[in-house]
Length: 497
Image (cartoon, rainbow, N blue to C red; front, side, top):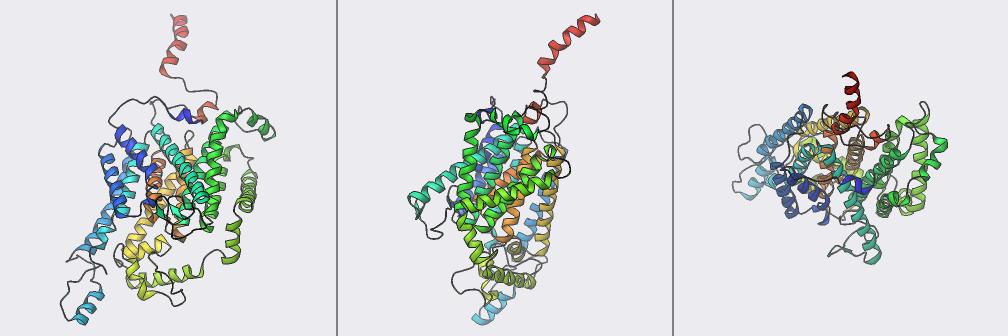
């Protein structure tokens, strides 16, 4: 699909402010250093809250309302945990013993708390709140197919722009991030992010989206309902270069920026997501028995070739350090001990950096401060307890199942749930090894995409006009509208009279 096809004539409605704000937040969230500071998070929460106020509801159907209700259950569970951790008189949560120990040592009475740091849970609420607002807004705005496609393009184009900035800034002034000095990862591209691993996951996710947009455009232009692989090269030559080269350029710049981050997990998981997404998109055109395996094998070979061609430094890191750092494994073991000592309500939201030192393994280097567990599920369980972590894990499982239903069940616009499913799987797997989903600059735009993908995982309501898509065009032209159907019916009516 060329870039001009996704810009239909826009008519004013009260739902436009919500859509424009969502697009603005999705494009702008990665800009201020990944939006990791409290001021940026508060600003995005304000924008998303205003957008939710104007969120369109006329396109919502019963499945969408069930999704919103499920999110409401997560919000209620978070509210209960927050009450227990912030209240001076929690209902069921026990007080942390550290407060009694401090009182005995100091010889003065200290009011206890269920959190090891009082009121820290309130300040740590910003990022989860922004993610919840983003996915709710993604569902309401993305219930309309055209708006969901615009969101997909906004994330893809903004990702390419950040990739261009990342590569150019690395070549021109590698010691700066925007207007600040770069103190870490001087030999890696980080874009506007502080951490190279988050940058790799972001650029990789945008590359997945660009690949799917290119595949959809190319597939739409092929004349056959099923691809004839013998004529594929001839059919692809009929595509005007000026209509496909901009998308290819954006894909290549995202891949280049991703490889230049030198992140092992980010690059490896992004390539895996691209291989699986490519196979799923073309699954109906592949040979019935061996096609999937051939596609996966070919994709793996191409990924290895790209890794050798563009990712030489990534390969060297695999050779020298293996798949996972030893210090990170020891940190996970230490985090498991925190969970074992605080299984029900954790140590308090946002308190990991204070809870970790007493449990820090002696096998970890004494250099540096561990302010993150480098595993979002483990850190979540250590801060809010096992029950809340299991509820969040269940919500992720339901979301992935619904997205899979959209990928395999939809005939039109399956690219939207497929892009959401691919990036959700990528971010979830990467967050098990790092803290990608804890960076609002990454999580906000992609939680919005997850919401749009969930909204588009259900069949379009019957009786409503459906916008023309690539799948419709390649099955013999666009759907007849009411205005087209009336003239065609007039001769038949005349004959019957």
